[in-house]
Amino acid sequence: MHPITIPGPLQNLRERLDHCRSIGKRAVFPEELKRQAVRLSSEYPPTAVVNALAISPTSLSRWKRQLDGGDSNRHITPDTNEPFVTLPLAQPCKAQRYRLSIVLGSADSDHTVTLTGEVTRDQWSEILDQISSVLLS
Image (cartoon, rainbow, N blue to C red; front, side, top):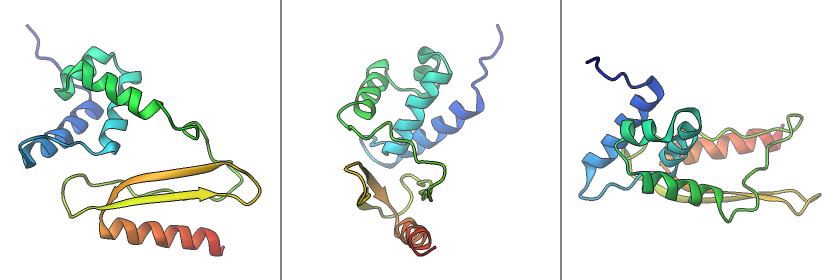
């Protein structure tokens, strides 16, 4: 019998999930990791994803519903001619985290995009710097 090889992206996410599992009695996964799992389930068979990540099929289904439901702005893609702020990647479970909620809108439109989650102090500072540079350019 040949050993099972887990693709690199699944292995990387598994390690990050395992780190979160090791921190407390009950694992709480950041939304970023849930999003990655959902994205990978469209690139790999869902069964392979749940096995590689050691999550239940129910968890993956619930994450898909949570990330796909209720937000009318979820499919908005930035216009490539407009400035766009790239948020820093979260380093889950390492530093003290703070709740973040940013609503971005335009005076010319009723559309808004709401960003929510948890960030470190350094990430918060980087977000403000990037937004400032876009607005002042």
